[in-house]
Image (cartoon, rainbow, N blue to C red; front, side):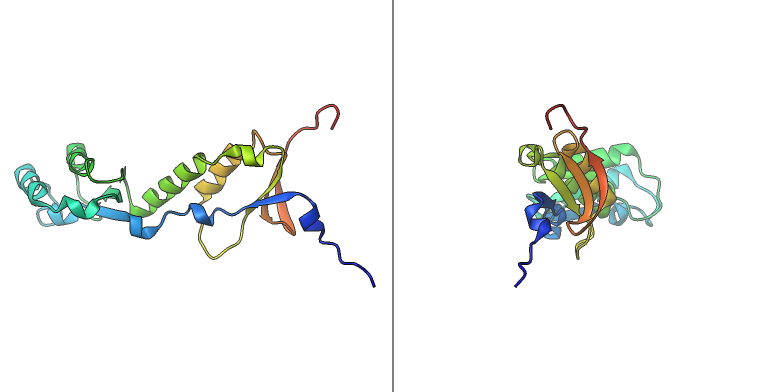
Length: 173
């Protein structure tokens, strides 16, 4: 009887799945300026300031908050800054942009904190298939983080990869 050898398992390839780095939706919130605008077009400073003073800021406690305006209106920069000043004491973090942009930024931040020591001199496959959508920016960041330490970086699955980077051979290897 012939023994089946799992060449992928013996290859020393380490698979890195980026799905766990996707931020949890329940930890994110959006502050939309739209309801604070007069006729969804104009920001009146006096009214805006009054509305912010009575707004329930505790709903953002410990949350990652995207500050955005979902309608096409001219919003002065100070309005976003004023909102940020109210959010700062309660929110875990504050981002300017859409909730999708915030999610991407949070994911890239988490990936930038990866301890690269565990990937030193390893053949790494960045998992390319899965049920969780991964933003392209995450793949760029993980490549940036691992290239200085990894022996090689590939994209896909261990059985079918696209080579991304291979460290040059040094004398004695």
